[in-house]
Image (cartoon, rainbow over all chains, first blue to last red; front, side):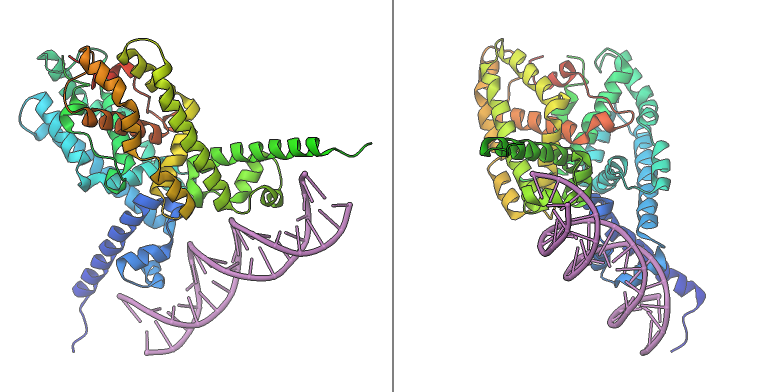
Length: 198
Length: 198
DNA sequence: GTCTATATCGTGATAGAC
DNA sequence: GTCTATCACGATATAGAC
């Protein structure tokens, strides 16, 4: 058997890395950085504990890498609202559905863990400073402004409106409803009643 | 100096116990059962680690005791809505304000920790089964029914309405907004727009 | 009743065989 | 590249002095 060439090795390494990160995201999101043991991640990824340290220097580095990825995803996801078609309200509903749909939920929970837990690595804390509520508000301002102009969205302070939107959505995301007995994600139409002109 | 009599000793013990529980609530609510070290609780309470074990057999027992207290509080708090005065909407707003006000928040966060974390003591899990979403819905049903009857609250499935109410409120509580940079608790009037007849 | 000292165990991270 | 064995440390819970 010929030895693997450089390209093949790199591919194996990349796949392993992705595999570890996917496993780590699952566990970190639910259990936080302290509640997560490296053994849990390695078990979830189906590899040994020792191997993880070939790909990430420490638990902290792994966590921080995931936070970075989560921030990137949330920003690009929010930006995409402007590429959607339909009225401002329709856009907002579609954005909301996309956020609440189980897809991005793990990343969202991870960011919440990173924001609230104390023993988060300094670098991750620093990254989170760049993903402030204000930034998201700015990103959604044009959408809400247009909605108010055409009389589709409720009047009132636009900052308060968007802040309320993000706060409620954040709350729903961090609840981790799929795993909560009895809880059910409210319909988007229900939530939108807060923001539509009555 | 005469020796302390039985009554005095009991009083000291009771005070210490309360003191430990208050400190433990603060720490558990924010950091969860795993993230909380007994040393943190003892530091918060201003006593030594060893002494804690004179009052609670283990970390698990302490946690479970707090969960029990939290459930009791949330039930009696919700029940009180029927003793309030005013229209159904006014009652609901006052209940909401009471819940969201920092007061009960620690207990709420504790219950969320207990619901979502994996390594919660079996007994605490069992207690939580008794505090199901369905129970709270039943408790609020009369209020919503009257509100719908007099045309103050939105029409539609009453179970969905109350479920949405509790889910959104739960989300806001678990966010732990006081400690979150940029986040702000939405005004109750804003939230109520979801449930009022437009 | 309260403290300090310590036994015991679990976890993060490393070393070295394959 | 991957695994197993191991070190070093920190946390729970206990023991015993005051």
